[in-house]
Image (cartoon, rainbow, N blue to C red; front, side):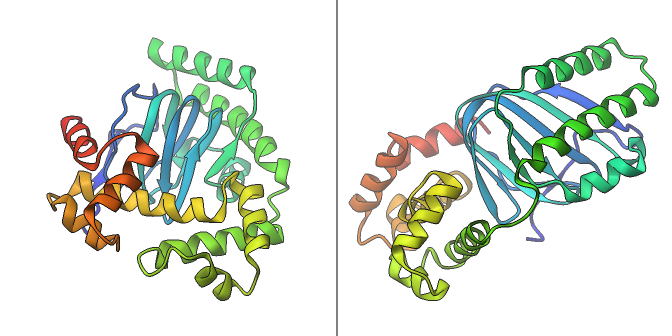
Length: 269
């Protein structure tokens, strides 16, 4: 974890920045942002966004919140489109800071044309330059109020299903190399395969097995894009019986061979 780089997209004396999300598909390496908050609003794109130890599917329209110092990375499979806001707490009112601390990392927005119009207006204000902190503070206050309402659609109360799903995700993250068999996880969670599948479908729209396979795929992509290990060696690390089985698995989920994925990933760096 100590080797995770810290990136800064905002200068030391700046309090605010808004820009369009870069419309490129490339896996990014895990990194942190030091001392500012980041809001991301996407109305197009698909893929995955890892924040801390959680992996979220990009299903626009969607909101992501990255806290200062939090590790994150992207792995898009379709071009993203949206807005990125960077800001420091100096711009916020006290009630906004209180709201900030309670925000989840991920919110499904539903259709929110007025929210995206507000973001467009804010970007025009920013691009025009010369706006003082009071203007940005006012926009952030309004955005925070809207996000608070949207995050409150689940009342910020973790249900039994939410809790079990998060426990399952953590177990998968810890043990996906040890086992891809559901009975291993069902035993540790003291539940049944049927219950686990129902909860996974309710929480993510995926089966419990798909959750495990996606974690394996994520690790495979990381090893292919961040190391020079041969495909055969990566297959062994991921506990596939041989390289052909790994290639078949990878192609099933990406329509690419591991070698082609590595070529594309490296060409984007």
